[in-house]
Length: 401
Image (tube, rainbow, N blue to C red; front, top):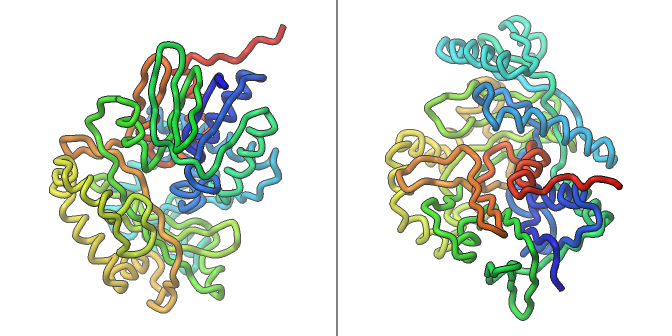
C-alpha cells in the first residue's frame, strides 16, 4: 500500500505531527511507526510533566512563540479530551544578590515575551511558600502540570479516530527515498509513503544517516536524575519552585515540581548518560558510549562545560551534594526525604565544534523531513511544533467545497 504520509516516532512530537496532518488533510492515509510497545516511552514519558509558559527564551524567538502557543494548545487539548491538568503557577526564586540581578533581567524578558509575571518580595514569598527561602521571586501564574503519557495516549486515539494507523513494536531498519515515494523497512516488512516525517528523538541522528542524509551533529544523551519526596511532604510547596537560571549553564538546574498525581519531585540534574535509552543508574550501552566518545564535538562540549560537568557528576554520585542544591531554597529538606524516582534522558544535539544545539534542527529532502532537534520544552510546544513541520512540508489545510 502507498500511504500519503508516514511518521516515524511515537513520542509527543511525532504523535502531534500525525494528528495535525490528519486534521489538515482529512481522509489522507497515514501510518505512524513506533519501535516501542507503547506511546511516549522515552523523553515524553520521563519528563517532569510541566506545561511551561516560555519565560526563559529571547523575546521574539521561535522558541518563545511556540512555547506560549503550545501551553494554550496543550491546555485546550486536555480540556477537550478529559485529561486532568492543573494551572498551579511557578515561582522562580532568587537566593543571592547575583540571582536577584538575573531575576530582574528575566522579568524584563518576560514582559517583552508578553507573559504574565508578578514580582514577589522576600516577605510575600514567605507568605506564599513558608518552606521556601529566598530574597525574592518571579511568579508565573500560567505554568501548569499534566501527565504527558495520558496526552500521548489521547493523541493516539485521535489519530486512529481520524483514520490513521499506529504500528507499535516495530523497529525501522531501512529508509530509502525514491522518485515518487519513500520506502520504510523493518524486519520482514516494507511500507511506502509519498511523504515521510521522522521524529526520532534519541535516535534521530541515526535515522537521518539511515536515510542517506549527511549530518554533522550527533545526539548525546544527558541523563536527568530525579528524587521523589515522601508522601507526608507533598504539601511542602504550593507552586512549582525553580531556581533563577544561570545564563552560562546549558540546563535550568534542580527544582521542586508538583505532579498531577499529588506528589512532589526534586530534580533533575544533568549528567552525561552512558546510553541513549539506559535509565538505570550507571547502566551502560557500549554502542552508544563508543558512538559519542568517538565524536570530536563531545569532547569539546565537555571542555567548554567542564566546571559544571564535574559538579553535576559529583552530585549524581554523592547524594549530600544533590541535597545541598535543593536546600538553597528549601532548607527543611533532609537526606532521608530524597526517595528514588525514575530518571529521564534528554536527546541533546551537539555540533562538531562542541556547541549544544538549542534551536530547532530540520533536515529536508523532496519527500522527507527529519526533526533532528526539538529543544526543550518540546512536550509543551508539541502541537505548534507539528504545525511548523507541516508548514515546511507545504501541507495546507484542505478547502471544503
